[in-house]
Amino acid sequence: DAKTTQPPSMDCAEGRAANLPCNHSTISGNEYVYWYRQIHSQGPQYIIHGLKNNETNEMASLIITEDRKSSTLILPHATLRDTAVYYCIVRDTGANSKLTFGKGITLSVRP
Amino acid sequence: DTGVSQNPRHKITKRGQNVTFRCDPISEHNRLYWYRQTLGQGPEFLTYFQNEAQLEKSRLLSDRFSAERPKGSFSTLEIQRTEQGDSAMYLCASTLPGISPLHFGNGTRLTVT
Image (cartoon, rainbow over all chains, first blue to last red; front, side, top):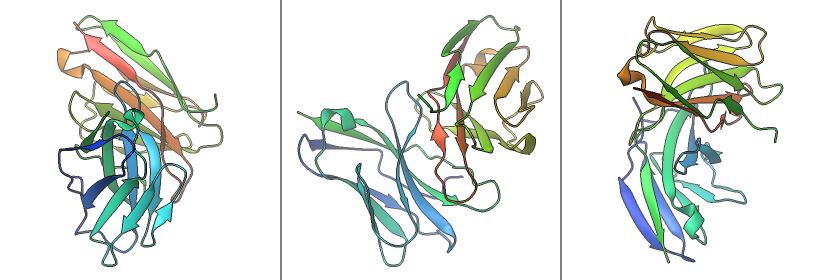
């Protein structure tokens, strides 16, 4: 079972920041937080991952709370192309390192 | 394009027929995963290979399903005696050991009529 909970949907205006929340209160010390997104009829696309420090790349920023029980994915300037389902996943990078997906959050970016 | 490649992109078959899908992972990725995704749901794990060894199978992988990765490179997923409930998107992903992210292909969409 997925170890994360996300609201089912949210929207934001084009050009504004999109802040996508995720709760993972049962995360353990060796588990990382990964974010993927999926646009209709495509495979999931990797966005970013982190352990406990905030991370930033060309796509997004990941803010993880100090207690690691929740995180926020930030898309700084959302565009219409960012409309997708976003998955927050807690991953144990030992053993088989598989990803266990939940239902994700549907982000709709409006013009 | 050096990403994960899956073929075919679409497959329509009649109930009871056998189908086979192929996945070509990113070169040098020794870990390969198969997932299944139905409408409105997140992808569900089916099975995992490290090199040519199949190390884990989900209970979703009934005995009609078989996956192989004979030389530790490409992989095939076969479904025998297809049923309408097998209609789904079948996704393949590959990665390196450790925290390296999984990279997914664009899937094979199976429709069983």
